Amino acid sequence: MAWRLLIGTLGGLLTMAAQAAVKVDSVRMHRAPDHTRVVFDLPDPVEHKVDILTGPDRVVVDLMDTDFDFDVKTLDAGNGPVADIRVGQHADKTRIVFDLKAAVRPRTNLLKPVAPHGWRLVVDLFDKDPPPAKTIPKPKASAEKPREMIIAVDAGHGGEDPGARGPRGTKEKVVVLQIAKKVYNMINNEPGMRAVLVRDGDYYVPLAERRRIAREDNHADVFISIHADAFTDARARGASVFALSNSGATSARARYLAKIANESDRVAGVYEEEKDDSNLLSVLADMRMSGSMAHSLYLGRQILQEFDGVTKLHGNRTTVEQAGFAVLKEPEMVSVLVETGFISNREEEGLLRSSTHQARIARAVTNGVKRYFQTHPAPNSYFAAQRRQQGDQYRIQPGDTLSAIARAHQVSEDALRAANNINGDRIVVGQLLTIPGS
Image (cartoon, rainbow, N blue to C red):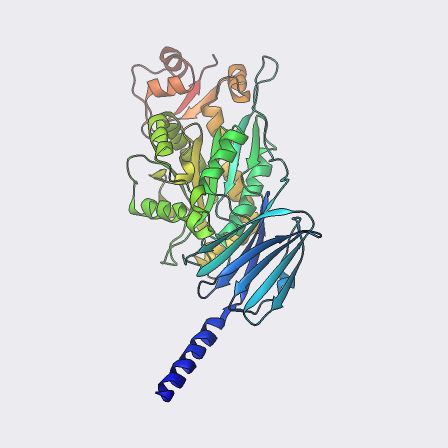
């Protein structure tokens, strides 16, 4: 009986020792515009406690029954409120103290494993007085000054969501932000266009928030999400362009890519209440999308044409593919997702890391957007004013009709026929039409 008791006691001690062996050996910190995110990588879930202290301001995080094997001095707090981080090892816990420059509102979330991450404890330190969001005023047009077209440039992934990784460890979130910034700068050097970056640093923006920043905060006419593709077959290569579909994906690959992209919120550790699971939004998008969806296909084709000679196209496809990408579900914007190449292909990974190649990709995207505005000028825009002054040209795309082209360019069918010596309604894909001034 005594032996059984001793064995039971030893078993309990061994169990406690095993529980105490949970080791935190990786910590990451990301600074977003309105909060600082600290992520503890864990082999198993742990209990934790958070306290807010004042005089001076501090946040204390206790991780129960853990060992800590990470040098917090290697973390970069950026320009956020964290002044210093201290770690104390106690018999039953690890205590992490965040010394603050200003008070914050902490929030924690224990996340279940989702590839490429295991268990994570996320500590978000929200600024009590966040800086005002960078926004663009709603553009106004006048007889003297036509309005600019606003383009939201969205670098995919970010923060806790690294996206795909190349054979040499290149992270998708890094290269797409570099390309997005180049697109941003090029667009802002073009007359009649103005760009805004959805994210300008290494932090994550939820999918629904990306659309809101673009449309509600910045009144964007066009939304371009920049990504880099990946596949299990390292030979896969080439760029491609996608638009939203409300009637199923156009290919198995498009369906797969949409699934991966739509899981970004889970990978990044977005809280349940922030997820874009609203049926109402999807219904509204389906009801109102027909016009913007058609124009998204026009824009996508222009970008694909500009890629010719700059980069290979995946499968030599010159058509825009479609699938249910959540980030594109905004009915009032023309929206496309650009896969700039396969980061899983060693050769293309090297190209995507090259500033020169990034600039070529960015120039192709910028030229595609510019050409789209020239061929489909919005009323009262700079491009509409340009066309009135000098006319324009349009290259016929698959699926185009004379009546649809006339409506898109706000001219009559008879004027279009007269300017191009067309009898009847027959037009040919690739044919270049002169668009008469109105």
